Image (cartoon, rainbow, N blue to C red):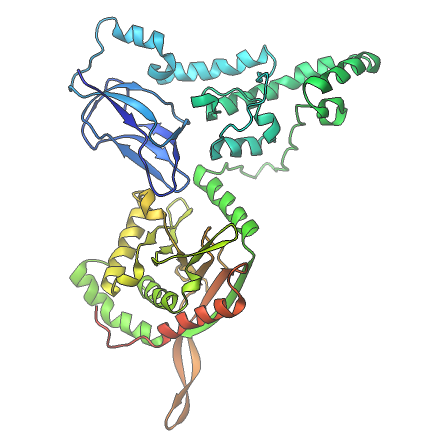
Amino acid sequence: MALVEMVMPKMGESIMEGTVLKWLKNVGDTIEEDESVLEVATDKVDTEVPALEAGVLKEILVQEGDVVAVGAPIAIISTNGEDTTSGDAPAAASAEAPATDASPAQEASTQEQAPAATEASDVAKLDQPASGRFYSPLVLNIAREEGISMQELEYVPGTGSEGRVSKKDILAYVESRKNAPQQTSAQQTATPQQAQPQTQASTASVSAPAAQPQATPVPAAKPAASVSGGDEIIEMDRMRKMIADRMVESKRISPHVTSFVEADVTNLVNWRNKWKDVYKKREGESLTFTPLFIDAIAKAIKDYPMINVSVEGNNIIRHKDINIGMAVALPSGNLIVPNIKNADQLNLNGLTKKVNDLANRGRNNKLTPDDLSGGTYTVSNVGSFGNVMGTPIIMQPQVAIMAVGAIKKKPAVIETPEGDLIGVRHFMFLSHSYDHRVVDGSLGGMFVRRVADYLENFDPNTTI
C-alpha cells in the first residue's frame, strides 16, 4: 500500500493560501488521475483542484471553510487502487479523527451542539495574547464585520497550524460572544460599591476598557436595519464581498482622476461590418470590438510606458510585459477580470481568439488563477451595457483603467477638399481613470487621446 499526501497547490502568482469551499469526493471514493477532488477559493478565483495520483481517498485532513497554506497537506490518497479500510478500520478511524471522517449528518449535529456548549460557559480566551500571529483575510473580514478589534483577536484560541485562527474558530468565538451578555448583565446587577473593587482589579489583568462601563469587553449589538415588510434582505456572496472590499480599498489607496475623449470610429465600424460574417464562417467565433480596443491600448502603452506601472511603497515599478485585463460580466452579475498576457505581441486574430476564450471560460467559471494574475492595465467595455461612458475604479496595484462606451451615430462636420459637409459618423467616448499619485493629468490625458487616435486612424484595408 502506498500513501500519498495531496497538498494545497500553488494557484497563481503571489497566492499563498486558499479556502476550502467544498469537497467533491468522500473518504473511500475512488479517484482518477486529474479528477477534481475539491473546490478551493483564493482572493482571485474559485477553482477545482484535481488529484495528481489515481487511487482511493483515504483521509480528509482539512474541512470546508478552512484556510490552508500553499503546500500544506489536505488529504491522503491510497495509490494502490484499493480501499484499505476494512473490518473495524472505519470505526477506529472515526474514533481517532471524528472531525475528518464524520458524515455530513454528524458534522451538522456537531455544529448544532457547539452553540449549546458555549451558552453554558464564558467566552473562551487565551491567557496571554498571541502577538505576531498570522490571520487570513477571511478571518480578518469576519472579525471586522463582528466588531472584534485586533487586540481582542489576539486572545481568540486557534486550532490551526501554529495556533492560527481558522474560520471555525472565529465563528465559534463570535457565537460565544453573543451568549456572553446574559452572564455579564447578571454580574452588573451588583451595587456600584460592590462592582467598584472588581472593576479596578480587572483593569490590571484584562484591559483598560473594562474599567469604563460604556466600553465593556462585549460590544453592544448592532442596530437593526430599517426593513419594511416588502423588502428582501440578500446576503452578499463571497465574490461580491471580495469585490466590495477591493473597490473600497482602491478608492482609499489611489486618488482617482478621469479624463474623457470622444473618438470618431467610423472606419473601425465599417471594417468590422465587412469582416464579422467572414470571420464567423471561417473561425466559428464572433468578431467583437473588444480586441480592436485592446490592440489600440497596447500600441498606446508602448508610446507611453509610464502608464504600464504599479506602485510599491515609494517605488514605481515599470513593467516590461503589457498584460491587458478585460472585465467580464458573470451570470451571477459579478465581474471578473482575466488578462491577456503580452497583448502587444498578438495580431488581431490572436487577440480575438484570446478575448473569446477568456470571456467564455469566465462565464463558465473555468478561469485559472494565472488568468487573473499579472495584469498591468485594464479595459472595461461599458458600451456592451448600452452606457455611453463610465468612471471605472482602478484594479490595484495598477495605476490606470479605461472604459469604452457605446458607439452611437451622430451628425458631424466632415472636412473635404471641396469644403465642409454634414454627414453621419460613428462616435464613442473613452473614459480614462488614473492614479494621480504617479500619473499626472498631462500623461493621463495624452494617453487616452493617443488611444483615440489609433482607433480613428484604423486602416480599413487591414485583414484578419
